[in-house]
Image (cartoon, rainbow, N blue to C red; front, side, top):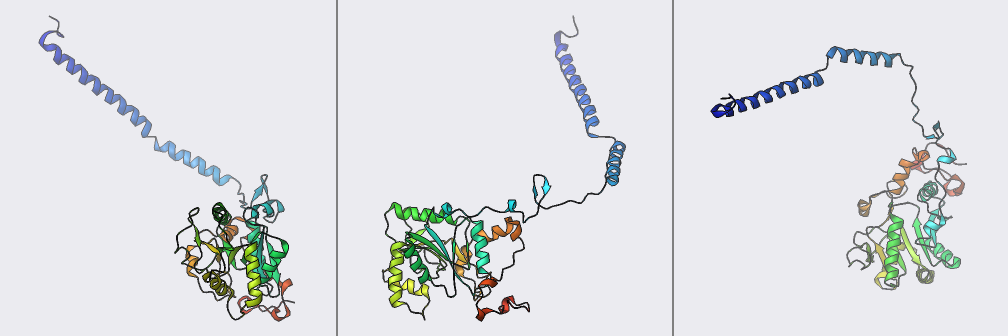
Length: 328
């Protein structure tokens, strides 16, 4: 009888299987040892060769300046600058944009011009000895604009401001809403107390939108305001308070965007009272801060003095900018 047959066959078969697995395990361990345990002397020698080569290589200064076509370029090179603002971009939501600027407010004109250029907004800097909103309303009417955006010279924008304003106007137009003024910038924390507009969740009927940092005005609204304030303007009262009074009396059809997309930057303008507005906590993505980060020539921004526009009464630099010099 064969040794692999009969009652002993199962024993021999099991033993053969165990021997096969033991042999396979030994072979696997040998290969693992060859792969994982590299000769440390060879590793040390390789490291020494690389180190010696690095030490003997010539030292080359690294130039971190921007490059165009693999060559070093001056950050003030015209090819690195943003293209000029396109009027068509602003026309997405308005016929014209005014920035009201008083010549005596040093530094603001330059900063706002750079901000508008970065945002590709074509803006008229409405600079006068004593600029008023009434002057702008008159100019808007005489120029035949159907609507105009008016901002003050101490503001900043949310990065998505154009898109938000366009959606708000689209919502008003889709429901054939009759409106005189749309506040895109204000300092009220309560503009969302009423029910949001059915076509856009950030659009509300105005409650008391104090501050005139930014607003869109229809032609009808401009005519109303100009006619009213020519007769009833109270110089002793702030303009924004008088506008809120008209809204409360339902003489002005007003809407507000909340949170707003235009904010006063009192931290940037020491000539103002400097008090932080509560609404500033809603400010998330500053267009000016992004411009400082991405435009090389604005990286070390210093407010220009706008000395060309100085009046004799403001010949001397204000105390908050004083460096011992005067503007000639």
